[in-house]
Length: 271
Image (cartoon, rainbow, N blue to C red; front, side, top):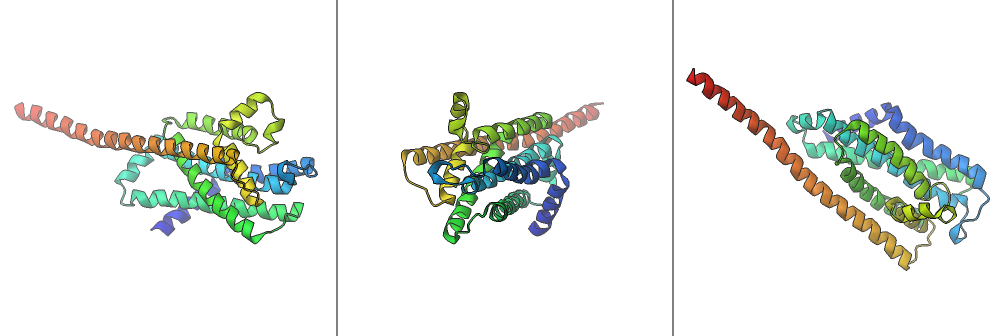
């Protein structure tokens, strides 16, 4: 049952042009375009363009997939009544949730290898087995954190249009304040302040360090890890209380409907 649902979810993703453009097409094209502009620049840690921006654009694809194809899908299911039908369907809700998570992991992993191979072909990116394995492990941890954060944020939306506008805006904000376009140190001061409050910026810095085998346990590293953990914990709390509210509201609806039926039956019996 899970394999069938996963196959269906992956098929539906490929048919959504909006998802494909923002998650699979735009990041690799931007990666290539920026490489033509800044390919000869040396970045922090004495890293070249490929060493700095390959992990960055892998993370950007992950963000796009998780927020658009996972988080936004939740809002769409909730606002179109699909979520209520799921609760009444014979397919276990856990199976549907697991399928959505696996879908996101599969697509983001494809993005991981896609950007990596582009880097190898276009920018002579070297393959270092140990760093590659460690980076993939870090990638999976960041994937899990983003799934939780995305689910919590989109659980607050009751309108699909509002969620769509938010998705488009937040993608642009993350692009410019997450260190995906140019180093934050070169940005205006207000952008640097926003970056410090952006979990994607902290994830990006950690991922670049792990990717290149330069992770050092400094104060900045602990701040980034702590910030990500705090945001993820808050997201889990939001999800916990949000799920309790939705369950109570779902139970309330049929109960009142039954009461209404009982009242009508009593009034008819009186006549």
